[in-house]
Amino acid sequence: MSADLSAIHTARAEAIATAVLTVATSGEGFFEITREVARFLEGVGARNGALLLFIRHTSASLVVQENADPDVRTDLVTALKRLAPAEAGWVHEIEGPDDMPAHIKSMLNGVALNVPVINGKMALGTWQGIYVAEHRAQPHAREVVLQFVGACADG
Image 1: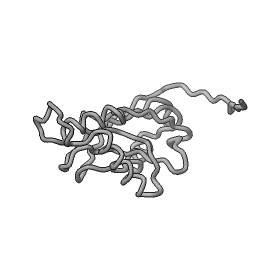
Image 2: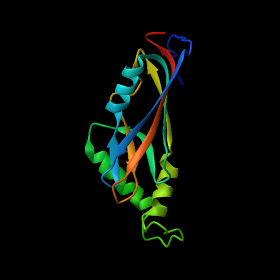
Image 3: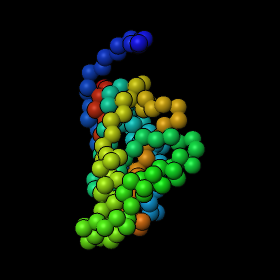
């Protein structure tokens, strides 16, 4: 195995900045929030640190996924439907037949993300974007807590 470690850079955590991003979804699917998150980082003058994202819901999730080909998002919805179909005889159906599958999909994807911030930019790969994954059929307003911990330009 061959592995190379880049130079190590250190920064003192000088700030914690927090905001809530409300995302209007139109039903099941993936909704990209990368630009809005980048604006948050610009607004706080983020330089180097960690971006933390947390979605306040149990029937939606957060993912880092390809943002070049929209067919990827279509196929991801199909895959999640296969893993947790609505018509599987779930006991929990208080909010409808898509409720329990939405909880399972949320558990599989996760509700929190950590993204390194280097020189004011998210250290995402070339084809990566940040998405709210809506797992319910109906539109919802989803809240994503954004938090930056690290050094800021004015610090």
